[in-house]
Amino acid sequence: MLGVATVDREGRLTGVSGTLAAMIRRPMADLRGSELASHLPVDAERLRQVLTGASASYETECRYLAAGEPRWGRVILAHALGSDGGGATLVLENITERRRTAQRLAAQHSVARILAESASLREAAPRILQAICECLEWDVGALWAVDGTIERLRFVQAWSAAGTNVPDSIARSQDMLARGEGLSGHTWSLGTPVWFKDFPNEAPMFVRGPVAAREGLHGAFAFPIAFGRKVLAVMDFFSHEVRKPDRDVLQMVLTFAKQIGQFVERKRVEDDLRSIAAQLTAAEDEERRNLARALHDSVGQTLTALQMELLRSSPAGENKTSLALVDQLIGETRSMTFELYPTMLDDLGLLPALHAFAERFSERTGVATAVSEVGDPVALSRTVANYLFRATRELLNNVAKHARATEALIAVHWTPASVRVSVSDDGIGFDPDEALAPERRRGLGLADLRERVRFLGGRFLMDSHAGRGSQVVMELPLGGSRA
Image (cartoon, rainbow, N blue to C red):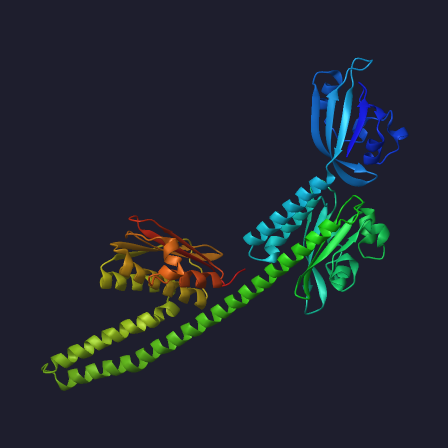
């Protein structure tokens, strides 16, 4: 659809087509003699250049209001010599649908990307609210989560466009809503998207209706986030402009609702698995602790008693062979006890246990192994300390088996929120992708280590190149789970 008009040297509309009047939604009589800039937000300097002949033409895309409703148009201005020595011909093309299609696609891509990059809905929410507001031209957005224990919607987060002068209290005039209360409670109750063209006038009974009227907010819509038939949260949005219901947007937010609902459920399952993994790790550690204690208290002490009895009964040393065997058994029992669970891990902490293991590892394999530390040590939970020790031991055993290394380093880096342990060597290196491939792991166990770190809420990184050694980094939050 194209609308045409002529513009005089002063920037006033003269001849106006009926199509242009319909596009701007003003009577032709009102348009004639009015300033072009009062209807279309064109650049004043570029307009002046075209009107005076300093520039032959000017083309732009702009957003304008037609009877209060937002539209997009492509404006073409071409210089035309008038009786007063200047002027222009105006052509306006309606590109509203094209623009809205692009906006919807941008919103879909943004939301999908944000969900892929986020660890939780709370982390993703402000970016999703901003993406929807900016892509679809809404001024305020808010997230409300269903609290199933008290059957209420709790306010989580809000976002508002810069310069909207909408205080935070608009988005959260109430921190909690009952089912059916307010726009979001109404949406929760219905379980479907809701749209109001002019919210204060159409829904004055809602709790934020008077507040919206006072702040000049008109258009409003909300949609539920659900998994299956269970509503998990609600997002609502407000605009200063009157906004007619858009079927395409409503259809699109149904896709958003499904995506976000699946994201929330997936993260819930991951949290459950992480919790189970932590419990299994703790149970396994307890079994190892009990077995190590039993070996030390029972087998170890019995062997020590036997050694003392042999020494007492044969002071002249006739039982040298038996004593040597007992001494060997005592050493092997101590090594087995340490491998199962080093008691110093509980008594002295992670660093002393790593130092002790590095010393034993160097003696056993010939790979010179050192331990370094950066930062101020922080008390670790038993789960984190136990896992990091066992994972470090597994990584060094891999170095001994596969790396052909001469030196290795265990580096511990402390922060107030996390502990990071890296194991590096000067060996032949490996291909990380190949090592993680299910069919070509070659017993390295790196995939299992990575998954366990992720289940405990941490990060697992690998860096290796052929002939240049390797480094594996494990970072865990101090609580052993995601914050």
